[in-house]
Amino acid sequence: MQGDIKPEVCVIGLGYIGLPTAAIIARANCPVTGIDVSEKVVETINRGEIHIEEVDLDGLVRGVVQRGMLRASTQIVPADMFVIAVPTPFEKDGEHTPDTSYVMAAATEVAGVLKKGDCIILESTSPVGTTEAMRDLIAGLRPDLKLPGLAIETPDISIAYCPERVLPGKILEELTHNDRSIGGITPRCARKALAFYKRFVRGACVITDARSAEMTKLVENAYRDINIAFANELSIIADHMELDVWEVIRLANRHPRVNILQPGPGVGGHCIAVDPYFIIHGAPGQSPLIRTGREVNDAKMHHVAARAEALITDNPGIPVACMGLAFKANIDDFRESPARFVAARLARQFGDRIKVVEPHAAKLPAEFGGTGAELVDLDTALETCGILIVLVDHDVFKVVPPEERARVLVYDTRGIWPDAKGGSPEPGLRLAG
Image 1 (cartoon, rainbow, N blue to C red):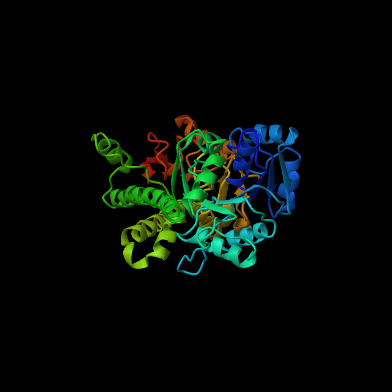
Image 2: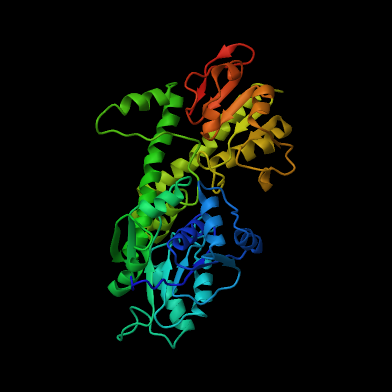
């Protein structure tokens, strides 16, 4: 840090990572301007309100906006530190080609206001080499500036890659306390970024190079994806062998060196379901295990949908509740959600028999339009539906007592109701996994 001098910070992208990051930086008394393409998002934040659901974020944003430490804009502004936190999806081209266009568009905007001494930090999860590609783009746009790794002389600008490691629902806590990898284009760049992050990160900040930091982020989520794939494949095997997968996992995990994760209807979100493809795209001939993990988890969605379709078809006329749309419990994020995929597929096939319970949604996503499916609250679903398909393990679902689901068919893909029995009209076996 440079005494009490606080850098002016510009955070580009005010989504699930960008807004919490901007708010935490502002809490550290650094003046922050957040940039977003959405005028609605900008207006919401400037009122001291938020457009996403995250624990304690509303109070933090309200406080830093009221103190004048955070403001939002649709236009890039000059700053000392630029933090890029924009989406990095993949193309729907069958090859899952990474799309870094949002990163490059943000870098183009930043290039227009850069001055000597500035630092650019990319936080968006990115394929290996993206930080260097961003540097090269800026070099072409600003030939008046010396860029790190390209000039023999001391560079005018620092560029680094620093990915987050956060869990939705605990983002503020984990942005502050989790360790961070600080990957600089050069060691000098890494030191500049390190000094910035030490203002608001209490976890260890470990210096490395940009490419290693990019790969580390991808590896972390690919590792989790493969472990979830084992659990999901095990659930399909147990189904084939007519075994209770939850019991098998519970017993196996009593081994001191075994820790099998819990299966579900697939894998969703904008990290675990996406990041492995960035590795596969970069090394297609060297990543068969990672590719297989992705294929297993994607196939689990279709397995769940097929079992649900069979259950609904075998019980004609009975209303069905699809419980949950989010990609994980207790959040309002539906990106790449397997629950959303399954529920929408059932809505297209069974129309107004499908009721959707999602406490974190004000309306159904666009793909439910015209299907006749209806968003209902939990009490309505329990009172009117004879089939319950559990797709998300929201806390509010877990506490439904046995007597409120005593005479319904239950397909529990999350294992939240181990006591559940199905029946219409006579009790039968619970469908698991």
